[in-house]
Image 1 (tube, rainbow, N blue to C red):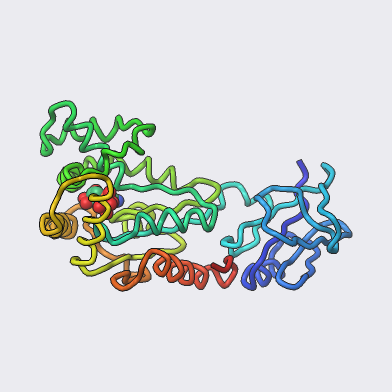
Image 2: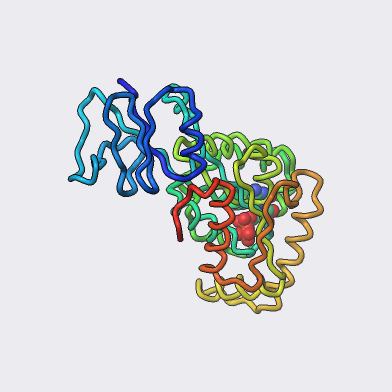
Length: 304
Ligand code: CDP
């Protein structure tokens, strides 16, 4: 297969393209840039899928290239234009950490959809470990059985709605301090992070331990009372009968366990961007996060 062309957007990408080593001819069209190692340069008028062949030559109808030229659209979050030989394995990682009910899960899902990246809720792995351990009558402090549960999680069960039950969250935070459990879950998370479309992972230790090399790290925080109200509403909507006071108390205990444990405690990475969502709704949080990420990506991102 011949790799001849790359098309990217964004100022940083343009600059990188001009300096890149593939020696391709580079031309600009407004916001877009086209690169072909043949005589023709095309403009890309709208979002295309990585590897797609639908582009518009000089504003005409979209055309498909023949097999002699492959056209690559690099998502806007790719700041650098890579030589096609280097495209394999090039991906982007966004790490989102924060305490329980800070809004990081919803935010991470939205961010992944926005940038067309894969999403992993790493909390679900700890929840599933606890669920499976409890289901077999295991004790939450039984290291051997907890590790066995972590090593044998069935990925198909990670969207089980019961994982969100407060008791499971509580139990998850009791198996999570076990270093061998964390080690057992590490490989799965790191393999996921290497997804060629790029990956957004949310959790407690993504920016510090799982993906310290992440391209963007966000640490989401919010006052504990606000978080308790959010979690209370979420649980009530799901039909769970629990008082807001109880939710607040549970959150405080879980926060303490997550922050004070010796193994991969909840802490912001030194290079994380802090986002306080206390006074932001989900739309406001998303816009703020996307602005932050776009700024890191060099202005090459889509607008919200
Ligand atoms: O959704 P919420 O923030 O309530 O919790 P979660 O992200 O589903 O995580 C449940 C528990 O798993 C946390 O309280 C942590 O103890 C643990 N966890 C962890 O230790 N490391 C992660 N990367 C993710 C979750």
